[in-house]
Length: 398
Image 1 (cartoon, rainbow, N blue to C red):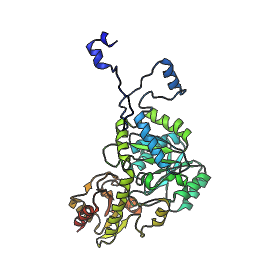
Image 2 (image 1 turned 180 degrees about the vertical axis):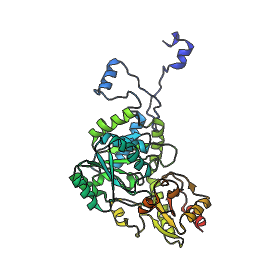
Image 3 (image 1 turned 45 degrees about the horizontal axis):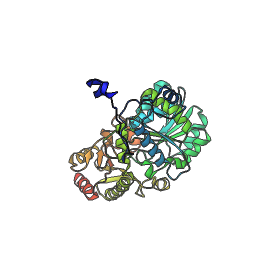
Image 4 (image 1 turned 60 degrees about the horizontal axis):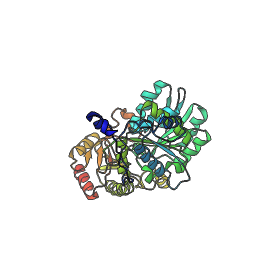
């Protein structure tokens, strides 16, 4: 047929697809749709009679391969099966799961030290849709049980553990047990730790969320998110439908970049933990530092809980400088090696000032109530040589 076609047609069509061996690396399926061999195959795939791909918003081989890997990591060593979907961002993952799970009249129970973006989603987007948010202190589990006992409208418990930026932890096993008694779904944002350091399914949690932009990717070169759920029917029928119809799906290129980062996850997390432990101990002895939040330190109120449910203290820490806001601003201005950037989980050390950046819209009284003072600095400790990190922090403080 090729010999009968005009020049422009030869430019458009691919007649020879030479794939004789399996590729060593995962290919990027950069295609919006997938062709059918015949009408019957198309009907079978559309109807679900046969497996296959239709349109990359519905599913894509690159994206699904990476999603399956993350599901396997979250269930590693557990007698649990789970399904994962990848989304265009961590916030897309959170919003898709909440939209799939909640309806007008429902309530969600959560902590008062959530990531700011999640709080705004609950208050500015879900509340006008009729979904109420109830905030409580999850270190006092009697409060959780009391609220569940008196309010049948609570359909979900949403957690972050460790929380941003004080690293406060929630007892996942106890909260999971309480939630099961009241038939309430539990969700945790596991971004800070990754499944290498914490597996929430081990403690009875129903859904795990990641901003895969952060530690799972680890290189700051793409944006994506993930939802992993043990209720596979719910994931396929509800979460997938929201992803497909709202269009919150990931794309093949970002999934491919994420997969490259996942290859070194274990190595990177070990180094993140080692460097953060060293920095936390150094800061803990510094006379201009009031206190340090890192789960390797026995002084942290959740030190014992972290040992129970985590395999390591993680690469995130925060510390409060003597001198408050003025000292924090001066410190940030003196940094030479560490990077001032509003993200976390990259291979390089990233520093933010929560009071003037990530939590600037939260009233001071509310910030300070959850430990976010004007002098608090958050550090995402990178995998560089720790001597260079310590040297820069030292000169910036002194």
